[in-house]
Image 1 (cartoon, rainbow, N blue to C red):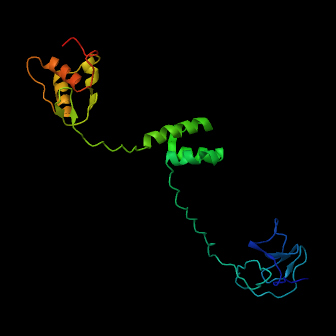
Image 2 (cartoon, rainbow, N blue to C red):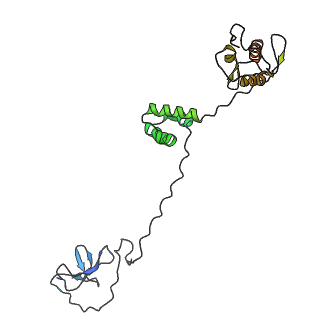
Image 3 (cartoon, helix red, strand yellow):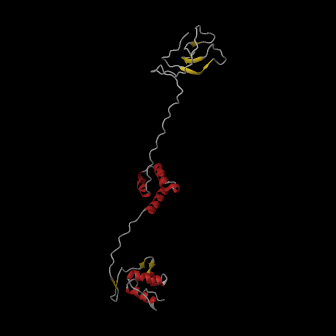
Length: 231
C-alpha cells in the first residue's frame, strides 16, 4: 500500500468521496498517478481496507502542490481580480481639411474610420464619395480672410465736383449701376441712401429720380447711352 507523495503534484477531491456506490471503506481525499488516497495520505483500494489505526483528525483543505512549494495550503480567499485596463484618451477629431490632405496616403479602411468621426452619420460609402463630402465640409468650415479695404480717395466727376469714397456700381446689396440702367428696381429711399453713403451726395427735390440718374452718369457709374429713360 502506497502513501501520498506530497512533494509531487497531486489532486484534491472536495468533498471527500466514498465512491459511486460507497464501495470504499473510508473517504477518498486525494488522487495521484491514478491512485486514490484518504485524508491521511494512505492509499485507498476497493475491497482492501487499510490495516492501520486511524485517529480522527479535522479535515484540512489543501491546494495541489506545485514543483517548487510542497507546503501550500488551500484557502477560501477569493482569487485576485485584475484591474480593468484604463482606456487611452480618444484621439482628437481632425478637421475636414486636415483629413482631406492626408486622404491620398491613407488606406481605405483607415480613411473610412476617420471620415465617420469627422462627418458623423452623414458619411457616405466609397472613397470618391468620401472625398467629395470632405471637400464640401472643408468649404463650410473654412474661414476666408477678407482682403483689406482699399483706402478711400476722392473721386472727381465730369463737372469737376469731388465726392469722398470710391466709384462703383454697388452700395451694400443695392446695385446702383443696375438701377441706373433700369435693370433692377428698389425703393427710391434706398437708392438715395446708397448714393449718399457711396458718394456723400444728397439727392432730393421734385426731380430726384432724374437727378439720381444724371448723377450716376456724372460719377461714371453708368454711361449716358445706357441710362434708363423712364425717370
